[in-house]
Image (tube, rainbow, N blue to C red; front, side, top):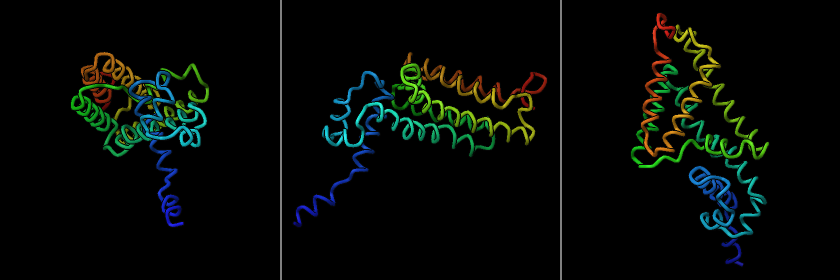
Length: 210
């Protein structure tokens, strides 16, 4: 009886689920959703087929869990929180790019933006995946626009349309990250950072911020 009780206490369904999702997030972000098999994921996570199927009967359900959880969290931690906590949108963007560039240079390789990677691969293949990714993107865009509007109330960036500027910042970052992934270096991100700061900080005579 004691052995059974000990075994029961050692079970950790939530821990197993998290390990599967974290493993899938890493695999989908670095290798891609399509080329990563369930067998690959079970082996990497160190779980049995039964444990895997108990939490995720289908690979799609796992993909959605990754989007709703890890990918949404990554966007929140990498972009939304730093921008909202910065003094201005410009200061936030500058700090975000600097940190990302530093981390990429230290690790020596570029996997790309997790959301951008999954969107580019899955948006046309599965409507549920597209909707999940669109929700994350919309939240990202909305929070950036909110920060820009707050800056405008403080007398900055009066020339900008907040919604359009938020889309432009995200699109610029995605494009630079895609180039960085293709070239496996951070040069495009450095260029993008400089131009975004110029876009956000130029003077009214140059049709930019006061």
